[in-house]
Amino acid sequence: MLVLYRYALLSVCFYFMHPLKAETLLTLESASQIALSDNPNLAQINARLQVMQAIIPQRGALPDPEISFNALNLPVNSFDLGQENMTQMQFGFSQKIPFPTKLALREQVATNERNVVVENLQEARLQLVSDVKQQWWLIFYIDRVLTIIDSTQALLRQFVEVARIKYEVGQGLQQDVLLAQLELSKLLDQKLIWQGQRKNTVAALNSLLNQAANQTIILPKIVVAEFKKLLSEDTLYQQAQKFRAALAAGQQQIQVAKSRLDLAEEDLYPDFKIGAFYGGRDDTLASQRRDDFFSMKLSVTVPIFAQSKQNKAIQQRKVEVRQSVYALQNLWNQVRKQISIAYSDYQRSTQQISLFETGIIPQARQTVASMLSGYQVNKVDFLNLIRSEITLFNYEMQYWHSFIEANQALARLNAVVGQENLYE
Image (cartoon, rainbow, N blue to C red; front, side):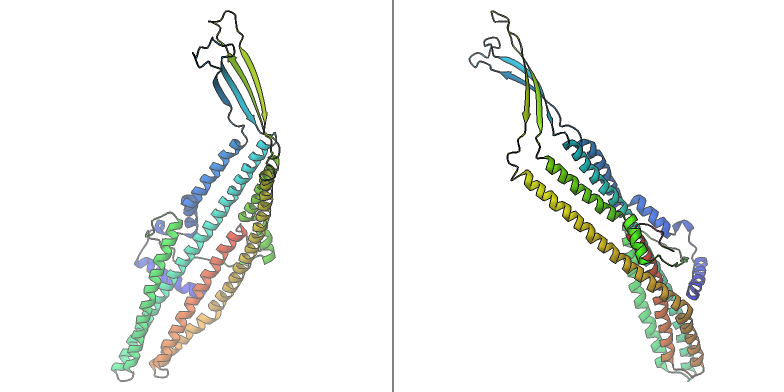
């Protein structure tokens, strides 16, 4: 934890030099909450869910009835309603009635489609939080890199001053001063690159938060992270089978395909149409009274083209069922791969963190201090002193890279498993 203490001290000093309001800091938790409440992609999936919810009762409803008004058997020579006995003004009502099980199956298809959207919404939420966390941790890493560059620049300026003093008293070389200045210039170049990378990452995070791409983001300077022991890979596989929304959506997609197959098979059965009609006849000009007519109608669809229509639709739906099963199996393979990769990244990164904290960085820091003392008494050449400081700089960069990798691996695991309880 020596590196953490060092940067905690630098952060405290930075705070008192440049105080920030607490509300301006974007924590990891607040970033996730903002994304979940404001992200437009989630909003459009939620809107899609509301659409699917409204579709369900529509699929289960009968077709709209038809009301008709007909003028029958009008004589074209006079268009007189009382001239011919069969002339009538007819009012009718008719209703299409699908085969009894079809409406229920259509409603079931819509319900399963709605369930897919429900799981897709949950999957989008998990993926969004994971993306936000990974971008947040990347910005945090870049901030630590910039802090390391600033502290290394300050130390190199001390080296330049020491080399300049030794050169002025005839105990050093001008090339030592030039070498230190060259390293300072290289650090400035790296700083410019990392500052540009931070702007790009801030733009990416702002996009996830539904904010202007150039909106300023300030992160906390100190983050306490405890790296616990994860569950075994096999246990994480089991957790993913239970909680991963994408897998649940795949299961629901299979149900959608099966419901569509059932509906295609039902299309081999006929639909019906019933109607009732009342025809009024005009008898004002006739010598005798003429009664009105009442008619009824029943029609049935006949699937005489089943070989090229309904049967082909059934074949199509059977293939779609197999396609959904294969898609779920492929997704399951991808999920296990993602779990194993993230698990391996977490294990490696946490081991590297421990190694850097307890061994490499303290030793490198001691080496720099020893080299500086040796250089001041002409027992160490300046090139070795610079090399030792650059080595320390690289180790500190690697430490924070491992720190961020471990946290990003956790964010990916949370998303791919489908829940946050990943520890023993």
